[in-house]
Amino acid sequence: MKTTIRILATLLCVAGAALVYSQEAGAPPAAPPAAAPGKVKNVIFLIGDGMGPAAITLARLVLCGADGRLALDGFPATGFALTHAANYCTTDSAAAATALGSGYKTNNQTIGRTPAGEARTNIAEMAYARGRAVGIVTTTTVTHATPAGFYAHVEERGAERAIAEGLVADPWPQVVLGGGGKEFDDAARAAMTGKGFAVCKTRAELLAAQGPKLLGLFTASHMTPEIDRDPESEPSLVEMQRAALARLCEHPQGFFLMVEGGRIDHSAHSHDAAGIVREMGSFDAAVKEARAFAAGRNDTLVLITSDHSTAAPAITENLDVEGLKKVTASSERVANDILKGGVEIRAAVQKGYGVTLTDAEVAEVAGALAAEKGGQRYILQTLLADRVSRKFGVGFLPLEVLATQKSSKGHDGGMVGVFAFGPGAETFVGVQDNTEIPKKLVRLLGWPEAELGAKR
Image (cartoon, rainbow, N blue to C red; front, side, top):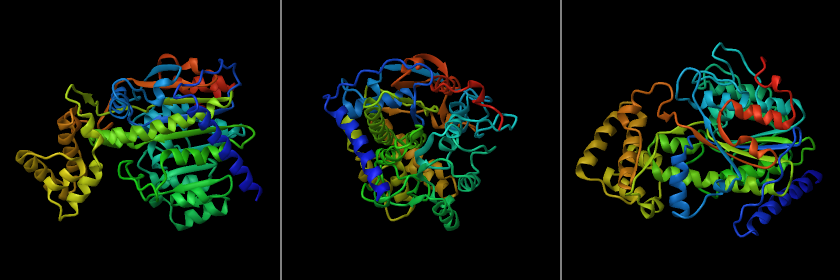
C-alpha cells in the first residue's frame, strides 16, 4: 500500500508539472539560473536516433505548419554536436552512444569499449555508483546500440542476447522499458522478477505495475512504428517516460534517465518521410513532458541530442504537407502486406500512402520484391518508401550511395542539434564534439571528470 501511495504521489507530481506547462498557453517557461557544479541532481537525456536538422524541419513543417514550433524549438540553450566515429567520418549508433556515454571515440559497431577493446566507464554507471537511480527507455530493443551504450560493454553491437544476459546478471538500471522481448527467455524474466522487478509486456501491465523496479518488454523486436502502433496494447514513448519518472523521481539522491526515440532512424533508413514525421512527433511529445517535469523544479537538467543524422532527408519546394498527414501506414507495414501475398503492389501502396504508383514504378518494385524473396529484406521496403516520399516532395541519399556504405549503412556525417533546459543549460551552447557532452554533464554534476571513461 505504501508503495502504491508513493507512486500515485509521484504521478501527481509529474502530472502537475505538465499542467504548469500547459497553463502557460504554449509559452516555454523561463530557464532556471545557471548551475554551479554539483547543483544538478537529475538528468533527463533524450536522444533522437537519426534526428538530424532536416528530420526536425520536416516534422515541424508537417506537424506545426511553416510558422509553428516543436517543443524542442523552445529550449533556451541550443548548439551543435560533431558526430564522427574513430574509424569513419560517419558514425553508427554504437560508436555514438559510446561517445555520448563515456566521452570516448570508438569504432563503429563497438559499444562501451575503445578501439583497442578496453571497457570504459560511462556517465550512467557513474550515476549509479553515486547512489543515483538510473532508467533506460527506448522505442528500439532495450539491447540495441543506443540504450546498450549506457550500460553494456561489447565488441559487437549485434550481440544482443549477450547484452540481455549481462543485464539480467547485474540489473543495476532500476527501470528498463522498450522492445526486444525475444532476447529474454522465461528464465531471464523469472530471474528479473526474483530480483524485485515488475516485468511488463503490455500497456495495461505497465500502467498497473507496482514497485520501484520495472522491466518492460512490449514487443519481440523493436517497438511498433508510431504510425502503426495500437495505443490500447502498446505504450507510447511518453507513457514509458512517465512511468520511469514516476519511479526515479522518488529517489532521494536523484536520477539519470536516458530516453531514446529510436525509430526516427529506422524511418529515415527506409526513406519513409511520413514515418519520420510520426516518430518525431512521438519524440517531441516526450521532450515537452520532460521539460514540463523540469520546469517545476530547479535541480533537473533536460538535454536533447542525436547520435547521428540518417539518410540526409532533402525537403523540396514540392513538399506535400497534407499528403504526408494522410499516410496511414509505415513502409514496414506496407512492405509486409505485399510480402505476405494476396495484396497487389499498387493496391497496398494506395491503401497505406494514398498515392498511385505508375506502371514503371510498379515494375521497379516488383523487381525489388523478387530480390526480397531471395533474402534481401531491406530492398523492398526502402524502394517503396523512397518512391512514395519523392511524390511527397522529400528526397534521400541515393540508393546506390547506400549500397556503398558498409559501416554506418545509410547514416550521414552532418552535425546534429543539442538542446538544453535547466541548471547549466548554457554550457551546451555552440559547436562541440559529441564526446564533450558527457564531460560537461560530469562537471555540472560536480563529479571527478577523470572517472568518466576510466578503465573498468
